[in-house]
Length: 290
Image (tube, rainbow, N blue to C red):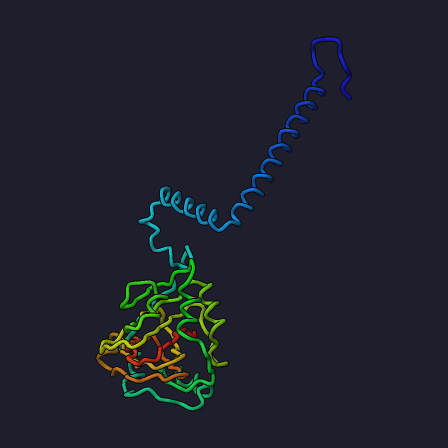
């Protein structure tokens, strides 16, 4: 207990107690100010305009502080640190599975032969039991609108995709849904057959009244089984064998009608499609099975 003293000297205990109370008072004041400032900032960020300005300032600040030349590929990456998986190399012996194939089989009961065809590395097509009413407009509004930008977007019209699909002129477009949120949105719109599972990363291809004889290649960046489900309209497709299989196997041509699905091994085949020249909008979704 501190006892008052008539001398000029101060009891050390009293001195330390007073200093402690001053520190607590100062800390309490700073804490209250910090909480008030946080509440004000949080409330301000609820305003859309303020939110956009703050995001823009933060982005510009980050661009000044970071050497973007070393991070230019991170925009569409799903992770920052990669655990490198040994790359599989296609050999001539792998090509023997497609050497004798000259067409894509159309099967009636795909759930019964799915694994058998997978073991043989044979592509096949079938008519799906899934009947969906998803339209071009539905996909464009969900996947091409907002802050989420598609990856590897290609089109003959270099304008806003939402404007492109409203034009009376012919067009085609395809893109990769590389964001996890886009994957969830797409799975909410479309569910494949029960014996297939749609992957987080997908591709969307669409066209309308586009006249061409040149097939468009889709670089799926994946070596495994791939499914192409025709949602509406029709697409002609071509499976092109990769090197060194190009010298052993034949390209396979076919057509996907509405509600048909094609399954093939992307390790051996490259997928190409021909934009539709029909007045009906054509839509297909590409996803991985493995």
